[in-house]
Image 1 (spheres, rainbow, N blue to C red):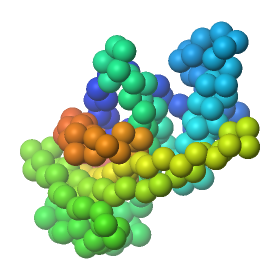
Image 2 (tube, rainbow, N blue to C red):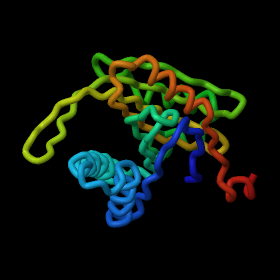
Image 3 (spheres, helix red, strand yellow):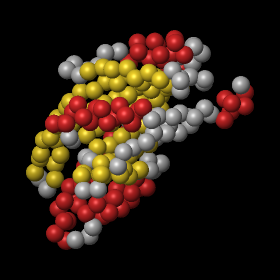
Image 4 (cartoon, one colour):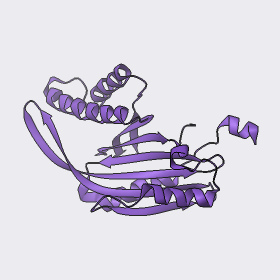
Length: 208
């Protein structure tokens, strides 16, 4: 699968997922970049490392190929969010040889309805022959550090993306702890998907 390209607003860190060791080194470097090495920030540094490590582990277990962690929307305004890209096999969805109209209808059918309490929306760009179906919902997660467990609410948005010529399918997942700004964050994620470009594989161009 060629790499999906999209523009992320503000400052984000890309975490390599090729190996666990590489990913954890990147997390350690990122937490030091965010907090510095001041002793008084050791607790915050450890908490961020634990949170980022949990995100990395979930992404790798799910088979993600790309992971980005949000740092700042603009200088001085933090952006607690992350985005992961998961490839999907169109053959498993019986979409490998259909036209674009059938591809988009097939993706709509395959992903089904949003989780209970969630919402569903379609983003369609016929010019780039890319379609995205968004499922968004809230969930509560627990984070434990030094024996203290905290619960906080997340907003999550799954974008099932389909591109044609050749047919390709992927899942892009966004999560943010800014649950009180759910509408604004979903608009932000929609805008990111609106910048999406998915280059055609070179072998497909050669065989065209």
